[in-house]
Length: 438
Image 1 (spheres, rainbow, N blue to C red):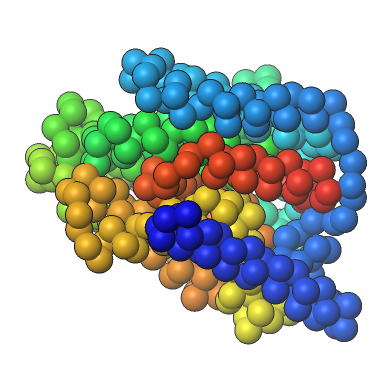
Image 2: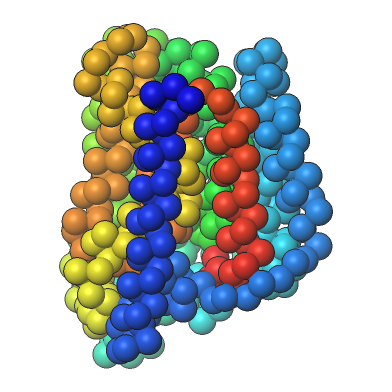
């Protein structure tokens, strides 16, 4: 065994130890006083060993990616590779979700008491609901919003209202939407890695994006949809700053970054990743006016319709500490959140992050260094979110948008099949042994 592989295994083992430590200590805290407010620390889940209709398909997808993923990624033409990666991620996410069955795994996910579909009937008059939105954020306010509606800007809820308006009603359609859209993030990340680093690294990352353990929570949480919007905003910016139709890609990127900020307050931290993309681009000034023009559209529309983002965020902070956020101990979650992240990025990413650090230090190859900077920006954004204290628990879904940009670090690894097998086994174990809230 060579020295690099041994160090990779040490990194993966350290990540596993972190997860086990969080589970053991968290279980003790939860049994003592219930302050963590999760069923299976550090995840919001319950112990529930089971199999389901998705089990054979999930195993088949995992085996196929391990066996054929790396060589196919190396030789497929670029555009078919994007489609195959997305299609594989789609199959992987659907099959994992269906381990819990159609109703429990997909159709009911977005209809529970804290979810978006609970308030569809309160948005018959969308402008009126937006003007009145901030009056229902605090717990003591009349008709207070369920937790997820209060905890996100109005763009998240309006998305599901619009789905209902066009006839895609109910939890089944909502789940289908977030899985279908959410899995496109894999293609977006590959595009960004290709234009900012190089195609070889993007191809090496493709199987890891397709078989990500994060798929457990992409199917079906609204954060999967948020992940795709943020990923495409970043990918379009990468295209713009590398000279690919900078006017329309810059404008489209700004449009999606604006939407990202109206889907989740925490995703404003994508400004850090966007700043790094701008720095990595060779053509950063030309698309900038179009980026800013696009960025203004969504805030202007929501403001004109009566939604006050800043006031809603101020009230959300109060609401956060009125609920579970005020009970969950920061001293545990500030490190246990990182243990939750291990479950969504897997042991391969832990090893990949070790290689990322090495690449940043030694700068052995320009393209690898550029990818390492991009991954480091995502890690920094995640750590800032962690330190803020506004993400205590449930980060296995909340941090999906950041996690997608950690996965390309797996391109630095050798022995791809072994690492892919570890990724697939982790996701299969989580989905078969636990019933996750998303």
